[in-house]
Image (cartoon, rainbow, N blue to C red; front, side, top):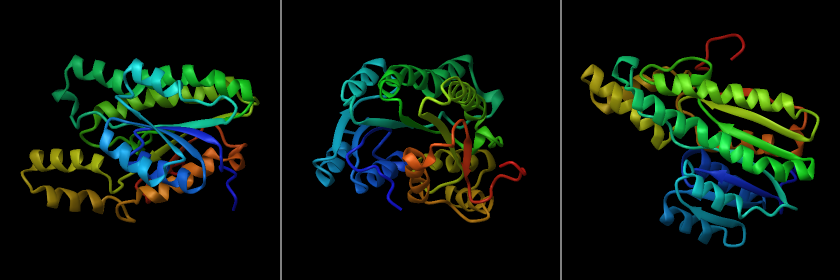
Amino acid sequence: MDLKLKNQQFLVTGGTSGFGGAISNALAGEGANVIVVARSEEKLKELKEQYPDQITPVQGDITNSDTIDKSVAEINSSKFNGAVINSGGPPAKAFLETTLQDWDESYQNLMRWKIEITQKMLPFLQKNDYGRMVYIESISTKQPVENLVLSNSVRLGVVGFVKTLSQEIAGTGITLNILAPGYHDTAALNRLFKKKSELEGISEEEARKQIEQKSPMGLGNPDDMASLALWLLSPHSRYVTGQTISHDGSVMKGTFG
């Protein structure tokens, strides 16, 4: 299938590792031009060397307004087709371990910047009467994950704003969807291994095995989810909006997972 992404421009945040890295590489492989935002200058350089004509690197912390402004400044209004909104998660904690500062920081790092960058990118998409926005969240938006009370709670706020906005602009050619990954083989999962290890007095290797066993299909591959993200970023997904789509290897037990 031709995804019709060649020569189109997308923005990917957290775009050099994990899900963001897989999506950046997949987009470039389809011939798209990609504004890649990440903290690591070294990883951005490596990606740029791999796709010198297609990658526009932006180094910085995407939760910072200055980095958001730098990223948006790279948008080519005539070719801009959308974005992948992605970043790391909050610390692994149970509710009784959290402080109000943890909750304030989680709002800043998980939700506030996503609202800000959406507000700043939306006018480009509205001008073109076309756009695709994909937000990478977590299976915790559908089924709480132990020791992730901050993620379990704040990511639901992101779902609320994305769903509401998708309805407000339905019919304009702009779609917004959320991907909710389960347990995938990414560095971000290490915080769960470490937390489980500390709480239960077991090795991180044993903690990893136990978490893997919760996923009937084993740990997922970020490249697999990238293929779904690319379809959502393509014109073929025009009739899908406001959805939170699981990519979880059957971790979700609910009928509507």
